[in-house]
Image (cartoon, rainbow, N blue to C red):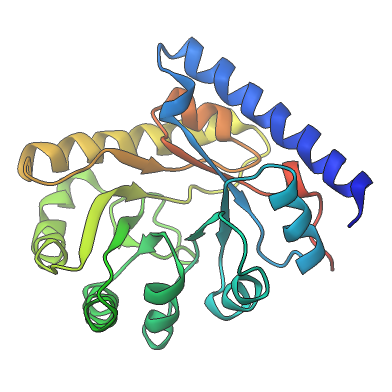
Length: 241
């Protein structure tokens, strides 16, 4: 095991945890209300193993097949694996069987398949609904950029809530990328408003979690209410080309 790599990752991880603690304190929140998902997509197995040895507790992956190969290679690990990327319906079985949470549930069709696979395995899967706040065509998620049309989301969300093997926990979004993280703040604020809207319309459902913020803007995301931030390169370093 590369002790230098473990030490470097541990130092970066602790630095980000410190930044999270500072951001939550400024916001009048406790540090434990924010969970750090270390994004390990495209990172080689030795980096992922080093991250676990460095104390990382949640790893986030974007591609189901790649993730399952890593999970299978690290069977002794107690780390939580979260799926944070777009999931094709045909990969629903991989997500249902290997992940502790799905951040990117973006269709009723995918929800139905996940529920079926979870039922077959006797599992329950916590999920977040991915919404597209920016209106960018490159982004996945339920259309939520126009607040006037938020009521149009309710029928699909109701169908998802009805699946017995899925546990709806909140919302997720990916804002546009800006060099200045302050420019992402309005998108985080809009997701928070959508959370309030859904709590008012579906008070029986758990809308606690907001997954938003990456290496570039996680501090602003926390200040605007994030409970999960997804940080990769700031901890694990650049991804191999």
